[in-house]
Length: 86
Image (cartoon, rainbow, N blue to C red; front, side, top):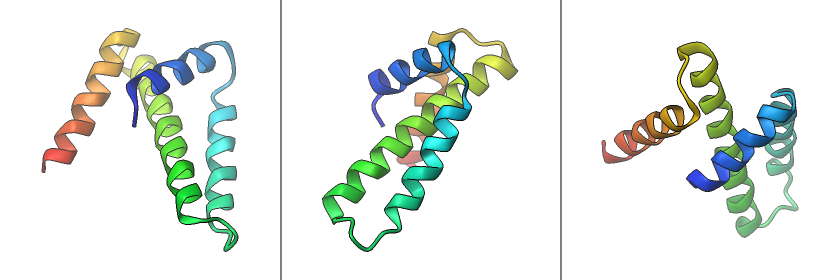
Protein backbone atom coordinates (compact mmCIF):
# COMPACT_ATOMS: atom_id res chain seq x y z
CA UNK A 1 0.00 0.00 0.00
CA UNK A 2 1.19 3.43 -0.88
CA UNK A 3 -0.34 6.47 0.78
CA UNK A 4 0.10 8.79 -2.26
CA UNK A 5 -1.74 6.27 -4.45
CA UNK A 6 -4.54 5.85 -1.91
CA UNK A 7 -4.85 9.64 -1.67
CA UNK A 8 -4.99 9.94 -5.47
CA UNK A 9 -7.71 7.28 -5.71
CA UNK A 10 -9.62 9.01 -2.89
CA UNK A 11 -9.67 12.22 -4.92
CA UNK A 12 -11.09 10.26 -7.87
CA UNK A 13 -13.77 8.85 -5.56
CA UNK A 14 -14.65 12.39 -4.44
CA UNK A 15 -15.62 13.18 -8.03
CA UNK A 16 -17.09 9.80 -8.99
CA UNK A 17 -19.11 6.97 -7.52
CA UNK A 18 -17.39 4.52 -5.17
CA UNK A 19 -18.94 1.74 -7.25
CA UNK A 20 -16.16 2.32 -9.79
CA UNK A 21 -13.57 1.16 -7.25
CA UNK A 22 -15.69 -1.72 -5.96
CA UNK A 23 -16.32 -3.04 -9.46
CA UNK A 24 -12.66 -2.63 -10.38
CA UNK A 25 -11.68 -4.70 -7.35
CA UNK A 26 -14.12 -7.41 -8.42
CA UNK A 27 -12.68 -7.41 -11.94
CA UNK A 28 -9.09 -7.58 -10.70
CA UNK A 29 -9.94 -10.40 -8.29
CA UNK A 30 -11.51 -12.33 -11.14
CA UNK A 31 -8.49 -11.62 -13.36
CA UNK A 32 -6.13 -12.85 -10.64
CA UNK A 33 -7.75 -16.28 -10.81
CA UNK A 34 -6.64 -16.78 -14.41
CA UNK A 35 -3.92 -19.39 -14.93
CA UNK A 36 -2.43 -17.10 -17.60
CA UNK A 37 -1.38 -14.49 -15.02
CA UNK A 38 2.30 -14.58 -14.08
CA UNK A 39 3.52 -14.18 -10.50
CA UNK A 40 4.87 -10.67 -11.17
CA UNK A 41 1.54 -9.63 -12.66
CA UNK A 42 -0.29 -11.12 -9.71
CA UNK A 43 1.84 -9.01 -7.35
CA UNK A 44 0.88 -5.85 -9.26
CA UNK A 45 -2.81 -6.81 -9.26
CA UNK A 46 -2.62 -7.41 -5.51
CA UNK A 47 -1.01 -4.02 -4.93
CA UNK A 48 -3.70 -2.27 -6.97
CA UNK A 49 -6.45 -4.11 -5.08
CA UNK A 50 -4.84 -3.08 -1.77
CA UNK A 51 -4.69 0.57 -2.80
CA UNK A 52 -8.28 0.57 -4.05
CA UNK A 53 -9.49 -1.12 -0.85
CA UNK A 54 -7.52 1.38 1.22
CA UNK A 55 -9.08 4.32 -0.60
CA UNK A 56 -12.56 2.89 -0.05
CA UNK A 57 -11.81 2.48 3.66
CA UNK A 58 -10.55 6.07 3.89
CA UNK A 59 -13.78 7.27 2.23
CA UNK A 60 -15.82 5.16 4.65
CA UNK A 61 -13.98 6.69 7.61
CA UNK A 62 -14.65 10.18 6.28
CA UNK A 63 -18.33 9.46 5.71
CA UNK A 64 -19.15 7.45 8.84
CA UNK A 65 -16.75 8.95 11.37
CA UNK A 66 -16.79 12.51 10.05
CA UNK A 67 -13.01 12.62 9.70
CA UNK A 68 -11.14 14.96 7.41
CA UNK A 69 -9.19 13.41 4.55
CA UNK A 70 -5.92 13.90 6.43
CA UNK A 71 -7.30 12.36 9.63
CA UNK A 72 -8.78 9.41 7.76
CA UNK A 73 -5.56 8.77 5.82
CA UNK A 74 -3.44 8.97 8.98
CA UNK A 75 -5.83 6.77 10.95
CA UNK A 76 -5.95 4.19 8.19
CA UNK A 77 -2.16 4.03 7.85
CA UNK A 78 -1.74 3.73 11.62
CA UNK A 79 -4.11 0.75 11.61
CA UNK A 80 -2.21 -0.83 8.73
CA UNK A 81 1.17 -0.28 10.41
CA UNK A 82 -0.22 -1.60 13.70
CA UNK A 83 -1.40 -4.79 12.04
CA UNK A 84 1.99 -5.29 10.38
CA UNK A 85 3.82 -4.94 13.70
CA UNK A 86 1.76 -7.72 15.29
